[in-house]
Length: 383
Image 1: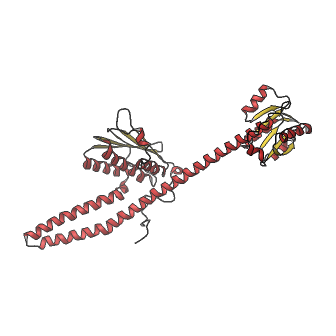
Image 2 (image 1 turned 135 degrees about the horizontal axis):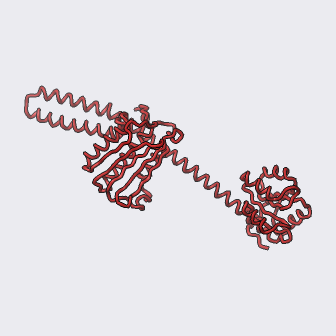
Image 3 (image 1 turned 45 degrees about the horizontal axis):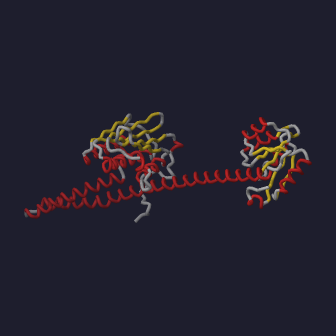
């Protein structure tokens, strides 16, 4: 007889034998040992004793079909209800084909007749090996889920940290750079009023123009780092972004908002704003579009923001690129508030990006920090 798994055969297998006949028990025990298996077999026949014994760890259960007051299928059903990942081999002298099929359908690993036990050892080893492989797959799947959850939490934390650092940098630009430039502008204006020489006044006018440009640039950088206009509401911020995008790029842009007074949970407006910002940046850089439309709505407690353009579209292989970090960043950012992003190229051309965020409170995962809250601290600490 060939034993299918030498590793299984080399170890002692703990087997629960549900059998009311001592003679049949000895026959099965002899058959297993004759096959070279090391087994520790415990025989039970009372139903309650069997159910209690199933709480202990077993490598396999071998059960007769006809038992005092119950059948082996009762034991199998109990194991199924309890979710016990233990292989179950049905051995009987009087089982019909229909009953055998029912047992296999209910989760039995195999069935054999008592008058032909030559296949018992291979069947037992195969059932144990299959059960262990299944447990290994389940454990691997669970670990994969936990790993994805940890990565999601890390990505969310990094997104939040980036927003906090952006806020800190914007505040420092406003307080230090912006204040200094404004002071220089006042000094240059004073010099311009008191200077007599035309050359000096010409130089001062040029310096004033340079400082004004620097102030405008610092304000633009501050808006990109920390959009203060979000305090006026997401609709107002998107309207400002759309108008500014159209002026800067020459691409026609339009925004449609179903309700410009919608109340949104903390964190969601910034996620929606950053998603639109990233989408418009991609439109200007890669799409070749001449028009982009933004549409935001709130229905049945779900916020939807769509950005679509009439450009060249995006290919499926572009979405699958290993270094598509911008697209991955959009997905991770949306996930921090329990949302998701769908990116596609409709048949008519162009690209459509849809952000969907359920607004139920338990869907918001702020990861312990609120990126809309200005904490006044840089993640690098105070200087």
